[in-house]
Length: 213
Image 1 (cartoon, helix red, strand yellow):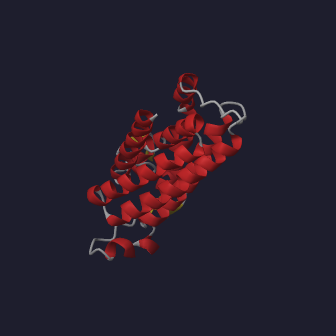
Image 2 (image 1 turned 180 degrees about the vertical axis):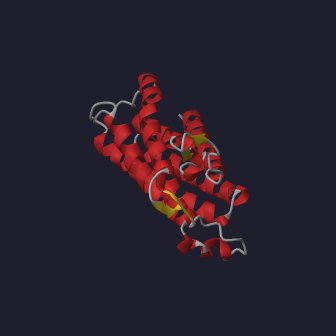
Image 3 (image 1 turned 90 degrees about the vertical axis):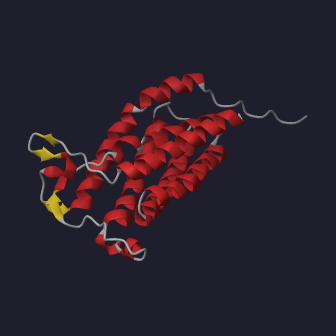
């Protein structure tokens, strides 16, 4: 059990750290008239795996063990993020990760006895929505620029205008990036149902303890 827990923690730390770095880099690619740099960052493709890790841990060992995995990933990931990225990105990522993952665990636990795809899909979508809202607001909204400025760093906000999702009305760039990020997370939640289904067949929940006596 300790080995499985260690693997889960390591996977969570890798996902969080990679996402913290990659979210700072827009996808520089044109898809027809749409410039994906106005919609997506590379972090959108790695972060959904955090929900796969926590959901599988929750299914196998229950919500308490899943929270421990999230907490361990949060502490180590936050420390690495301060080292590898800016304080503002680290604080935004840590806050969004912890709150989003705890919501994911709560939703999964409430729905865990439903049809197999309902718990992970519902939990991932609710957790991703809250995570995206918290992260992009703290990391890039001009109102929170003081976080990095307090460390003597340049304002890293993305408040300049850009077409929403590359084709809509002009909005602050961070809002367009947040919308694209959640769209990718939504698609990832659907695609990650396949590995979840495969692994849930191999990793079964522990049997409930039998009453004493």
